[in-house]
Length: 339
Image 1 (spheres, one colour):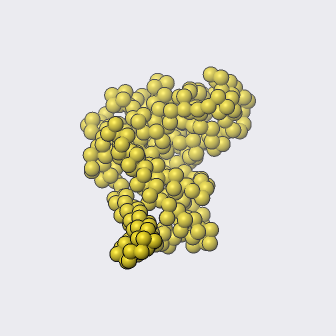
Image 2 (tube, rainbow, N blue to C red):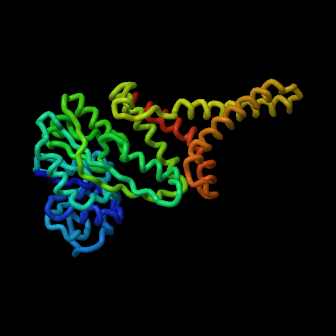
Image 3 (cartoon, rainbow, N blue to C red):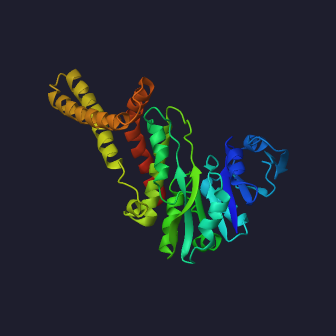
């Protein structure tokens, strides 16, 4: 009745994900690694004897019904498309390669899907994000915890294969694991289908992504431009999302640039023995606006967290960098969709 599809680039958590699914359900692992070196490597999933699939050495995962397909490193949307097209069951359940389905997941997903009306095209599992006890969560942990409230995320999302065929699957213009699942859900709903929540539970642990993770996350602003282009200005409300901060980031960035330009003009004017007070005053005002907005943004991220020295320093530095980076990615996305 169902096939589980898991796209991966070789995370060491993949073996735990497959093991948690259980051996009673067919699983298609989609290897989306890019380079020759990547393809020659081994997915470190632990356990099982090693097998070779299409030139890629992989552990067997001790799973008798496992298949491996290749997607050529074209991103998670293309990988998921390769996975569901290789399936031959009425339902396809997408999982990420770093989630852990709860015990009994396979039986519960069957119960979630078996009696659904024909107009229901998809069913989302309940995502839980284990957070540390005894302290407040960090900014990165809070961002991951947002998955528990998100709609139609492919961390655990089942679709009828016939509906995927009808709407063309995932839009491969989305190059990363961001918004491609929301885009699919909106297109499925626009085609007249319903999406529901199931009772199965899947845990999504928090991954340590490093100091600059929140800055790298701003690349998603380019994908937001594509969402607006495809679904119109109301797309955020349609997926249950709140208003973004891009407009405030734009004001912050403009104020910072104005302060730098006016300050430079003041210096040049002073060297030419002009008064230079006008540009200097305006530079001070623009700088004050930039500082106030940056401080507000940093505190908004610091206040609910553990407020350790490392976390505070990370929030201060990245809060300075994020506004211009977010604006640059959005401009890149707008240029891309117009091209």
